[in-house]
Amino acid sequence: MGEIDFQELQLPPVAGDETFGSPPKPPRLQPPRFDRTLSDAVSGFEKDYIEHLLKENQWHRSRVAGLLGIDRRTLFRKIKAYGL
Image 1 (cartoon, one colour):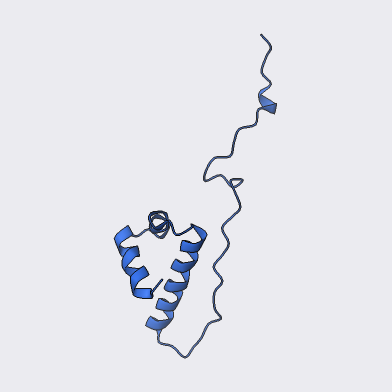
Image 2 (cartoon, rainbow, N blue to C red):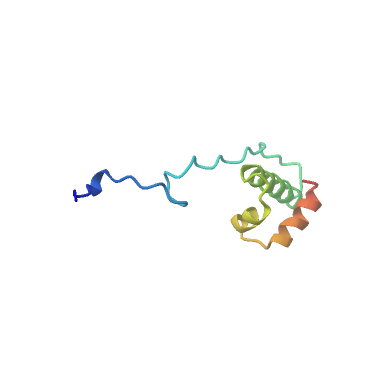
């Protein structure tokens, strides 16, 4: 039997590795407006951020909830509240 040259052995990329797929695109944010209340500004950002992550993850809601660090039911309520 011949010897295996481990330096030439190519392994597939692993999820979480920097070389796996393309890096996620940052959300396209609107320029800041200063004519809104803080609550309205935060809600607007939250809606845009959730919508961006949903699109980037093909609307896989469980995955997006995990990325956001929230419960899936909480994400569903936010989707409904924001009309996404």
